[in-house]
Amino acid sequence: MIFGMDIVHFPIGRYHIDVYFLRRELIKIDIELKERNRVKEFFQKLHSKAEDILFTIISKIPEKLIPSPIMNWLDRYMNKRIGELKQQIIKQRWQHDSLEKAVSDIRFINQDTKKAPSDD
Image 1 (tube, rainbow, N blue to C red):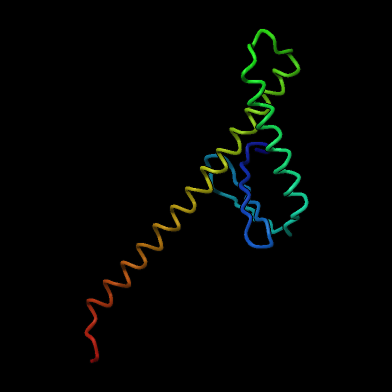
Image 2 (cartoon, one colour):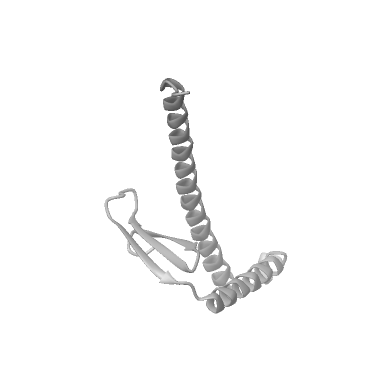
């Protein structure tokens, strides 16, 4: 989130689409197309997996034995993952809404074909 704006990333084909929108107000939507960088994506996924493994290992250690810098990292890690889950929820809502619209369009077309007389 940047200054009260949410960002949702959509990888589509060779491009990334970043959608910026104001929280609780869908007044302004800024869509930015970017070329996908597969090398950068690979290293981001590798870094993410390493963080996941490190988090799993550290979470099994008693809290009294964990130094404060690592606790701060755990806090940042959790905030980052919460942000990713929020993005995923927004993306799934958009996909759900578009699927609902497609289903309603199909139903509307089917109703029109049933009502219209056929020219057999």
